[in-house]
Image (cartoon, rainbow, N blue to C red; front, side):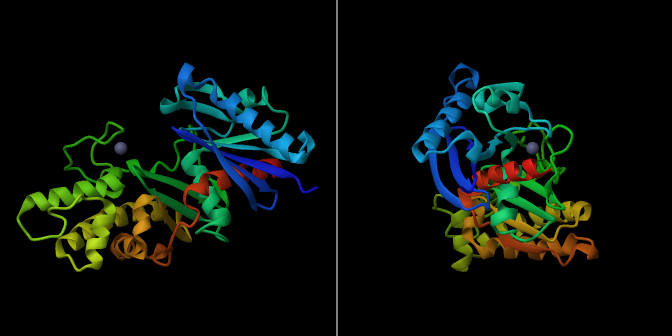
Length: 315
Ligand code: ZN
C-alpha cells in the first residue's frame, strides 16, 4: 500500500486536516474545532484522536503512515520548539515531543505562513521553482521565503515576517506588533481600507467608494469600473508593497513572488499594481523576477504541512 501523510493546519477557530498520498495527492480533507480552553491543552490530543479515527476507518496501521505535519500559528524553530502562540494559549514547548505522546510516527511542525508557502511552492502558484517568496495579503501580511527549496525560518522562527518591514517613517498609528509604519499597515486587506479612507478624507473627489462599504475588493472592483480615486489608492498600495518586495528581492533574489490571501482574490489587477511599482525600486539583477497568484487558497497550509513531513523524513 502507498503510505499516507497527514497535513494539519492549526488555526484559531478550526483545525484543517488533510490525508495525502506520499506523492502529494490530497485524498480527503476535513476540519475539527480548535478547543482553546485550558491553555490549548486539548488541541494536540484532539488532532491525534481525529487521525486515529480516520486510520481505523481506512484500515491504516502505524506503518502505513509516513508522519504528521503540523502548521502552527506562531513561531516554530528548526528543532520543533514552539515559541508562544498567543491566540491558542500556548507557551514555549517542544511540539514534536508533545505530539509523540499521542501518536507513534514522525511529527514535523512549522510556522503556518511558512508551511503555506511551502505548499504553494510544492503544488501551487510557485510549482517547479526553488527560490520563491510567498506573500499572503490577508488580515495581516504574512510571508514565506523559500531558498533552494527550503523554508527560511531563522533562529527563532521569525524569518519571513515580511509584514513588519518598516516602510513609512511618518506613520502615527501603531501596527498590531507595536511598531509604527509596518508594511502590513498598508498592504493587508485592512491596510487597503485604511489607505482608501485616508484618501477619501483628503478632499471631495467623487468616487463610488464614498458611500460604499469599503473593502480591498471594492477598491479593486472600482478600478475596473474606471474610478480615478480607487486607482490612486491602488497606486499607493502598489508603491508601498512594490518597495517592500524590492527590498526582499535585493536580499533573496527569488525566481517568483506568489501573491495570496484575501486581497489577491481581486485577481491579476493586484499583481499589475505591485509589479509595476516593484520595477521602479528593485536592483537590475532582480528585474526578471516573476509574479503569480497563489492557487491553493485555504488548503496551502495542509499541503505545506504534508511537505514538511516528506522533506523531514528524507533529510
Ligand atoms: Zn508591525
